[in-house]
Image 1 (tube, rainbow, N blue to C red):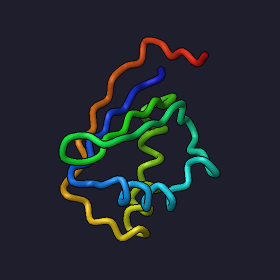
Image 2: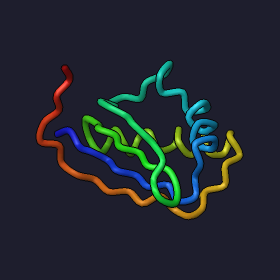
Image 3: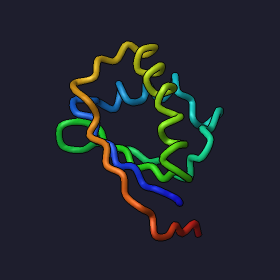
Image 4: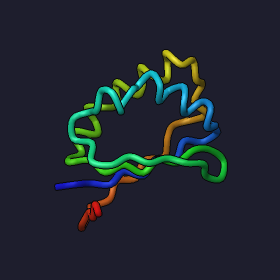
Length: 93
């Protein structure tokens, strides 16, 4: 079942997010199960909305994120706020 993941990354700037993103490299090395990814600024940090084929696929991708954070030298301002939600439908025109 497809799931949505909403992440709030407190204190993270666009520059920090982009530095981690460059190390994670999902465009050239897509993670298994990623359906859709988007991100942007939110109050107090950076937000992410992803759709995944399963929670297991999302969880399997987390070591790559952690490695990217470490490689980019980004200091997290606390743990991410992660919410999972079931996806009823996706439309790709």
